[in-house]
Image (tube, rainbow, N blue to C red; front, side):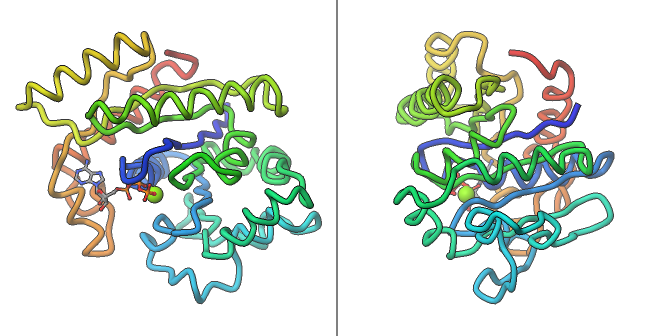
Length: 256
Ligand SMILES: Nc1ncnc2c1ncn2[C@@H]1O[C@H](COP(=O)(O)OP(=O)(O)OP(=O)(O)O)[C@@H](O)[C@H]1O
Ligand SMILES: [Mg+2]
């Protein structure tokens, strides 16, 4: 079944984009993958070497106009990977969307109309809970929540859970699932991290995935070489964790 997964957390800098990028690259080794960058910061787009200020096409047009085909906004990356780029225009889009002059479900309709072209669609969302987050959640089958291993993470997770419930119950995506919480920046030597994980599992029973993404300097360094860690250092702990995350997400697509 085609999966449309939104990657979201209210908190910034927790690994949303890194997770979207590396999941996407690992999935695209075997399947047809579409990545959608809904963040005006356009970090995912920059990961592929695009200068978002110079792009002649981006997700902006898909959110703003009814008659734009998905293919107009797509950038092929390689034979099984494509990107709907983000751009700073998305900030303008979000103002117009908040003003209510444009429907919020255009991306949902477009992705669902085109879903047979892809096996997996991953949507990177901006930090905070805003109209672009809502658009991502409306379009998705499920939300994946990367969460840094500290206690401040609880609030960000709770915020995504709350808005997901609202999107499910009141906004027209009744089947939206929470696919799970992925602990990021995991430090196996830290007692504090162990404590945070214990608390996370108590607070969100059955929702914390088994795979944890470790803090890994290879993950942090890869972007400086214009690469993702799964390409740049495939044997590193961070890259291996992303491979395991794909296996876990594949192993039981309806759990936890
Ligand atoms: N597991 C990791 N180990 C080390 N560094 C990491 C790891 N994951 C992400 N980083 C680094 O942390 C920074 C933030 O990651 P990323 O951009 O993925 O977070 P984000 O949640 O998308 O941020 P934003 O909220 O601004 O969109 C980046 O510099 C990234 O390279
Ligand atoms: Mg990001």
